[in-house]
Image 1 (cartoon, rainbow, N blue to C red):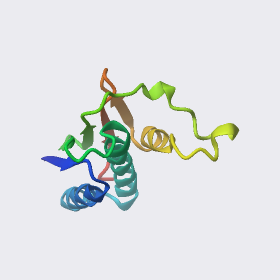
Image 2: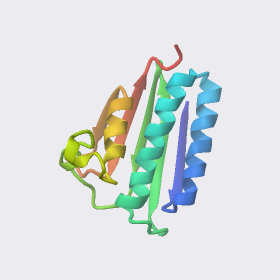
Image 3: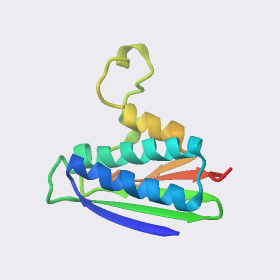
Image 4: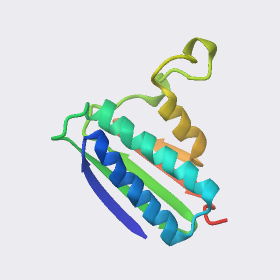
Length: 134
């Protein structure tokens, strides 16, 4: 299974992504526990792409690719921004960052996905979810 979505960098377009995740999880028969992990991770990645990558510029596009093969779901989110270094995002779980407004999305994605990889430029992330049908 393969699905590609292109959206303008508008927060309202998160609904398009949510609908696509819903559709894919229903078609594949993904368990409810795995659905939650996939949805939260995908929404965080797309939200980061819209807000931080493309800076809410509706002329810039976010590409989302969803592929499933051999009980492994991959979601890749790519924006047109300058990119970033994920290792520079402060850990939101340490006391001095508990009340910080930013940084939780990268943390959540890394902890909910089985594997996460960023492009060298830092404007694309691929999240892998394994054994999602069980």
